[in-house]
Image (cartoon, rainbow over all chains, first blue to last red; front, side):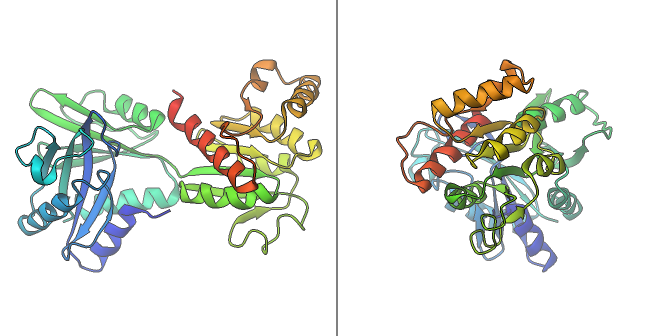
Length: 103
Length: 230
C-alpha cells in the first residue's frame, strides 16, 4: 500500500518543498474520514486524498501558498461556503483541512 | 510539521510501533505519544487517555480546550491478514487484502500449495498452522482466514486463533461443515462463546460463486468487522 508520509519524507530528504494536508474535521457525508492525508511538493505533484476529489485542486493550490509563506493554515470547505461554486463538496458534506509546511 | 516529527512518525510506521501525533492547531506545536511512555502537554490534561482511545478506536479526535484546538491522530501498526490454506480463493484474497492495506501471510504445510509460483512475492509459511499462528501472534489488528477446508489444518488453527485478540476469524465451509466443525471444537474444550466469534459460512452474502468473487465477499466482511465493531 502507498504510504503518503513516506512520500513526504522522501521529498523532504531530497530537499524539495513539501506541504502536508490533513482532514481535521468532517460533518455530514464527507467521503474521507478525519486523518486522511494528501502530500504536495513545490511543483504541485500530490499523493493521497482529503475528499472524493472535490477539493483536492484547491488544497494543492493553497499548499503552494503555505510552502511559500512557511505558515500552516486550516481551510474549510462546504456547501455553505462562498467559494462553493468552485470548491464545494458535491456530496453535501463539510470538511476542515489543516495544511502545514514541512520545515 | 517539523521534519524531525515527520521522521519519527515515518520511522514508527516502518517499525509498526503504535504512535499518536498531537497537533495544537492554534499554535502549530506538535507532540508524539508512544504507548507506555508518558506525555504531558500543558492545557491538555488527559492527553494519554485521549491518545490510547484514539489508538483503540483507530479514530482521530479534535479537542477544543478554551481557545486552543488540539488534533489527535493515531497511527496504528499495519493491518495483518493470516490465511490458512494456500488454495485458489487465497490467490485472489492476497491481492484484495494487500490493496486494502493488509500485510498478508499465507500458511500451508503442503509445499505444492504455498509455492512461489502460485503466490509470487507473498510471505509464506510452510509450518503447521497452529505453530505458524503461535509464531505470528495475531493481535487486535489481525484477521485470520481459514480456507483449507481440511479439519486437520483448520481446527488446530481455530483453537489457537480463538485464544488471540484477532479482530476477525472466518472459516470456509457450508453451514453443515460449520456445524460439524463446532461439534469438534466443543469436544476440544472451546466454549460456545468463543465459537460464536467465527464467521462461517465465510464472507458477505453477495451470491459469490467463483474463487475471485468469494475473495471479494471475504475482504468485504473483514472490512466490516474492522470498521463496524467497537
